[in-house]
Image (cartoon, rainbow, N blue to C red; front, side, top):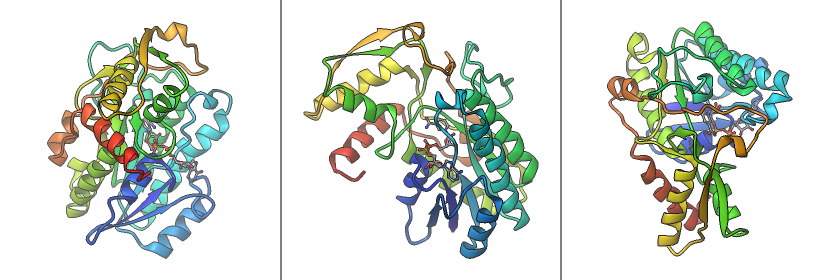
Length: 295
Ligand SMILES: NC(=O)C1=CN([C@@H]2O[C@H](COP(=O)(O)OP(=O)(O)OC[C@H]3O[C@@H](n4cnc5c(N)ncnc54)[C@H](O)[C@@H]3O)[C@@H](O)[C@H]2O)C=CC1
């Protein structure tokens, strides 16, 4: 199976690349060779590499900066996502596209299900929601995976930020009134490979298409996530800090975040027969990977 992945240096793309093996070829491409805002570069890449399926993981992910760069966010997250899906469709290829919990308002009392009403409160969330529609409209063989709170040994993310800051301060103030599930990018990558195998085994079966939620098991807050990082880091003899829980209101950011970012992944498990591990397992594996210097 050969997968072409957009957004080469991203967390999910690098995690997919790390899974490459004898029966799994991964071609991860990024700018300038493949720019999702430039359809011709996508068509050229597909013609050159002839994949079986496209994973659309490239995106504008600077959530706060998007508030002042709306055009750029929509160019990548709506139009770029649509270009990737359409270019794949022109060759009859399925596309697996990544989306986000930020498509929801975050005021529900339970984890969100796929059919729940959306209501993004940020430019990033609106651009990603528009991207979902663009993908589904452009390619009849499309599945969209909404995930959340992604971290990995690669790139910038909350876990790496916590480890960096704890070297500078004894106590870190962390938001404790947003709930969600930290999701380890290599676990997303493994789930995407399982989904790709299902899609390619029965490309015309409608059950694998459409919207899916895909997060690790369990839930916590950002403060709870930080505490777990430091607990596990200290247990390994690594750096740690004390966490002071604060309210979102005490940490103003340009973009509004959902208070409830919890996603219900039951449908993914039912359709693809694959479940992500508990979120704490990902923390363990990420710390291990960082200690091994594999990032
Ligand atoms: N990081 C997170 O916490 C979450 C991410 N997601 C979604 O998951 C997907 C993957 O996320 P990550 O791997 O964490 O993102 P990332 O920010 O690590 O990677 C995105 C990649 O896309 C690339 N990119 C941006 N514009 C591009 C363009 N015009 N052409 C080609 N590549 C371009 C960037 O250079 C970057 O390498 C994205 O769709 C994101 O919206 C969803 C929920 C949470």
